Length: 261
Ligand code: F6R
Image (tube, rainbow, N blue to C red; front, side, top):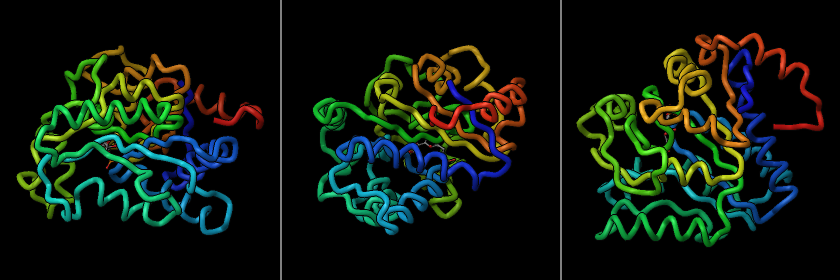
């Protein structure tokens, strides 16, 4: 796991965007994994800027979202499919149908999960997965206690996550759906490169466990310690509980330019 610590949250997005730009330069038909939530927003803005500047095209790329609420109407502004269109997909040149998410309004949710796993496999798997982390250590919506071997399935959101996400639902945790469909931890681990962004002190405890804790379903993101190519991008605040912060800074300062993330 490579841990990169920057003084500000603003410094993180260009690093993640660089990784996406290099990937698409090498493989224009790459498969991206997209998170929703606040953490990747600046990355998407940076990718849009680079697209508008003619540096990146998504015309041959495909993308898979991490998760979706169950039961939100198709036109609900917080349905993740709509959020990702608004924040990113509709602002660049993805081909129609190239961005997919789990179908949280399917009549048969279990079949929708199986279909989603099959679609990711048929696309050849995800090349680069962008991730955020919940204050309780979730990635996608794999809440504490999730099987480390899990695949896309239905999950119940914790009260903590519903409180954290209430800001998108008029401040009312009760308005946040109880259930979601989410890629499992094993699904995420199948992606070839994981790039997680975290900023702010509210993420410091989860980041401490992610990087320095024991691998455990209690802190689901810790499974990333087993990934051969995981990059964790942190601002100083999110890194504030890391015992090895000084060492991670030294490593990054000494990193050869050619190595990239
Ligand atoms: C959303 C997702 C979640 C978020 C996490 C952090 O697709 O997968 O795991 O990444 O809840 O959310 P933010 O970035 O809003 O703090």
